[in-house]
Image (cartoon, rainbow, N blue to C red; front, side):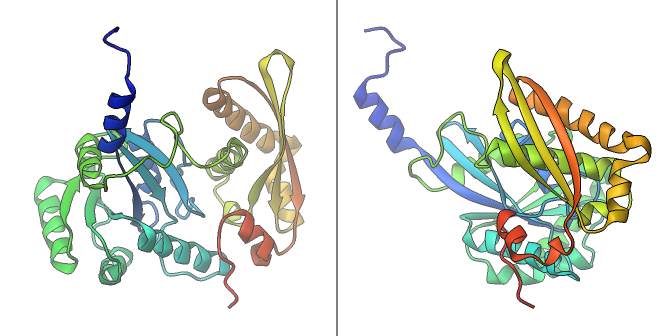
Length: 313
């Protein structure tokens, strides 16, 4: 029998050795959760923006480390909510932490233990299971300050282990991944080996376009906008036709997204199309439309579409 032939007995042994677990990444806005999820998975599964509150719902990325499958839950940033959408996002983040097998708390080394970080640490006592302190962006801070930060955080909350990483450069990420792989429970994998996210491509495509809105528009507008993929059609010759609608709340916002002579929406579309082609591996024909949907931020149906629970108050 060839050496690379897997017998049924060996297959059963491999199945018994497998491990799997859900790891929730929580932290203040812009702590680097989405960047870390992408780094652990090894490809882009969640959008990244320098603006805070980019992630709105739970995004699951799937990483493989030897016999272990890590289901990484990218949660919305935790902050003091002001609007209905804010409250839904924060509630979703904490629910993700409560349901996870392991909770990784990200702290921005540069921001330190500010009010948002301290509020998260104070509430961690209500979260069961192993907790990991992940100090991110360590390449931006001197080592003595990092050590003091780690000590103070561990005095305020009980962590099983502390990691110092740079999600952007990848420094320290392999060590974190190895630890997580060793500490998830034995059990079957939840997803196929080649699956990197539980989000359908239609949803990821909408998120990619929303990310480009964040990058191109520097006003408050992106928080008042949402993107939906209306059409996804496979064409002859290996092309994909994607039609998306950007919804805003007012006509004045629609004009901002379009830009003078339609230049802004063209730039957003070009940016999104380039990235979608890289992710899908096919030619993409992307068509963007901008429509006004008044009060979408108070529409329960929109919250359900985003995977958020609608706050009644």
